[in-house]
Length: 354
Ligand code: GLA
Figure 1 (cartoon, rainbow, N blue to C red):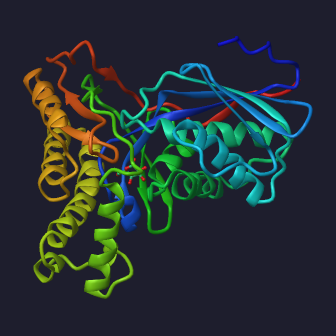
Figure 2: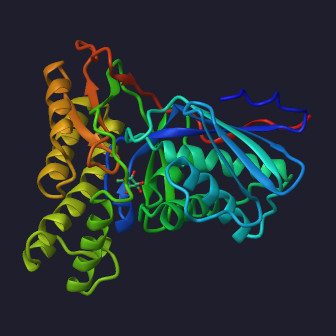
């Protein structure tokens, strides 16, 4: 691979953070509650104008390239290319200008590790391209929707808005209580009083498109139809009693997980970290048994983290692989391979043309 040429004075650099969802998994597309935070690791995208009408993209960490017509990005890209083409395509569809551009992508997030490298990439890229064409970034909820369409329509994963909102609204020192019914966000101070949150990879890479993720979404839709409601947020507490297997367990997960988000907010406000650990364990049990999104490698990772002294551990993100989030008391040390995570700031332009 030849190293890309140095960037000129018109270059723009933007950063999109990864995210950890403390609790509230598979609730976002059910109009439910989540409690994510952005982390310091993420994806950096540098863009600069290029003569002509081509987009030339370089993924530095992978040593891979893409090259396509800026006015008509092809829809058949896979992996990171689908995100780049899709972000350009959705910006164009929303009426933004994208001309010839060279872009360079680098990151320090494990891909497919459940920390949403995908939203980190699309949010950084969208912010960089908007700044390059001197356009205001506009409303960040709209931008989250735009980036989510990239994942839904270009990548083929029917994911919700959790990752994009976490990346675009993250706040240092805070988790965000996100209500997906009205997209309201409430910062909740993440004061861990000497406890530590750490994420360990299960070694089993996950990909949402093609995993059971879309099946779970379809099951939730089927449950809503059977119950005659618009979203599972409207499901009454006894809804599982009126549904066949496995829809009853899917709905039970969503209902109990929403309640666990509320309980986690209370536990954080009370400084009750033991309680938070118990909630992480309960969330994992529900994701494993009722929602069935765990795999053997994840179970082994949960067991390993609990053996290392975690007060609670659970699969994080979409599931079917990825990472495990664990909460360690001050007396325990996370294993060496675990990444200690803390809430950091939102996606941003880090260098604009002078
Ligand atoms: C993935 C999706 C999110 C959300 C989580 C599960 O990260 O991108 O929209 O559904 O899975 O909570």
